[in-house]
Image 1 (cartoon, rainbow, N blue to C red):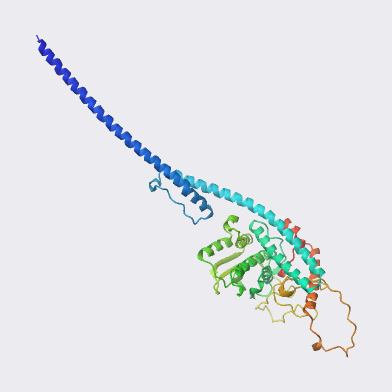
Image 2: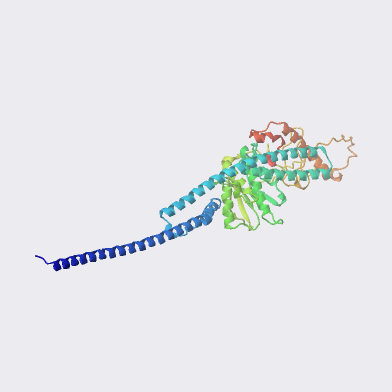
Amino acid sequence: MIELPDLVAGGLAAGTLSALALGGGLLRLRRQQTRQRAEISALRTQLDGSLRAFTAEVEHLAARRVPAAAQRVAHPHLAVPGPLQPLTVGTPLGIALENVLLALQAEVASQRTRVDAAAQAGMRGATREIQAALYRLQDALRRLQQRYDDPELAQTLFQLDHENEQSLRRAQVAAVVCGAWVGLAREESHLVDAVTGGQARLAGYQRVKVHNHLEPGTALVSHAVEPVAIIVAELLDNALRHSAPDTDVVVSLEHVHHGVCVTVDDAGLGMTRDERDRAQRLVAGDAPILLTDLGDPPRMGLAAIGRLTRQFDLGVDVSSASPYGGVRAVLRVDSHLLSRLDPADRPPAPSAPRTTRRSGPAAPAPTHAYGTQDAVPDAPRHHTPTDENGNGEGDGNDGLPQRRRRRTRPAPAAVPEASAPPASSRPARRPEEAAAALGALQSGTAAARSEAPPAAGTPTAAAHDTHHTHDEGGAAR
């Protein structure tokens, strides 16, 4: 029989063991809680750091990367900064941020194109109105030139007409850049006439020296006349603007294997490689042309060339340096745009430089004189062939276009043959008389041309064709 003290001792021992086991469990549980609190604190710290890093990355995206990505749409040479944390590259976060930039660039490009198209449409409408007003002014100046014979007044009118011609050229270039048609298709014309016609549209055309090395009769098909005249005018305008006023701009017309090349060399400062590359991209016409890419104010000459080269299958290169230190621009006209005219039936304009080549036996150069008047000075002027009555448009002082109405002169009294003075002793004609006589030639052609049906063209251009006269060899002004 177990005694009471032994039972008490056993109970105490069991209680002690139970207390020790419970205390060990409580101690382990406390240690586990402490460890869990430390892990939770570490995770909270890591989460706070990730949140701060994500916030900084988003702020970097909004402040630096998004503006740079938007600017890159208009300026591809700009670099877009990378993420603030390089470790995010390739992660889901980094990929999501890159997708944001790509979507932004696509939307900016789309909206930019849409806004620019609306701006071009507005400018086309404005230039159409401006061109119509300038054509009306040109017609009024022509009527004044035909009405008055005073040399000083006529010279002033001729200068105003030339200034109006330059304004028409600028409006036409703006319209071409905005997608408008160049105008009516003209009749086939000598290529040299198209070149001198473009030259006559410029201020300072006296500095341009044209060397014609083409075969006689080399001509352009009708739809290429006006584009070639516009391109030559813009290339010459760039050459004249970017070279010293006391230097010449040299133009050479040469046959090449696939057609004809018009080479323009200036003695200006030239262009840097970046400027040359940009100019070549514009004249190539491969990329869409936006008004916002042309500067402020927009410089539209090269952009207009790019439009025309793409539309009419022409080629322009401005990537070479001129032997005179400036820029060499080359316009290539392929064989399918060339034609041939008989120089005997349709000679080039009197002011066009004579070719250095001869297709047959040399013949004396035509004087294109009226009666016994002096030869017309060799300067770019407007010319059309005379009609059967001997009427046409004339030329004036300083090489500017001149038109005079025909004077009514009394018939000279009969002079006995014995009393007639010898030809060597007759007084030379005064410049005003020579200009008046040549003006009579030109005025009749102007009237006859206004009655003739125009060539087929766009409705917009046809509405103004009664005011639209020809440059050298039929190139539209």
